[in-house]
Image (cartoon, rainbow, N blue to C red; front, side):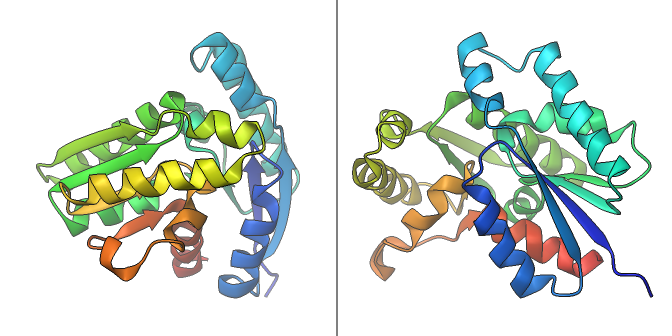
Length: 219
């Protein structure tokens, strides 16, 4: 049987090795390829929202991935979730937004759900998705959304240490008031590993491993 092919669309080249490692671990029999445009998130920040022009670019990348032979496509950036869902309506192969599997797990895990991000443009789309997935599952939830001020700017300035300290403090604070926490950005996942067991009082879910494990269950 011909092996399946997964097309991954990224808005940061730094995510390629993260997903390569996860695919190697959980999807050993699946071929993968990557498409990257690291100007998308910058453009969203400059323009203040996901504009029709940016959405068209996302749709073009999804179409390109399908044309390149992908049997399944995943877009690894939460900020462009709405554009991904729109693009999915025009493809013959399934298209997944990276944060959908973790949103579903959160809805199954508890009623009080926390979403944390370092960018407002990412927080909104993931929070909206969680609410829609909860409605689809017929579950009532209480959503708490939090932006970690200054963390993204620190990371962009090359100060990963300050970014990690700010995110860790926000995770400790948020975990006191929720049943589960979702990381709206994959770049925050490494911070969880720096937390002590006493700080991990609720599940903290990151999209990269959750999405790849989900794909492993269906591919």
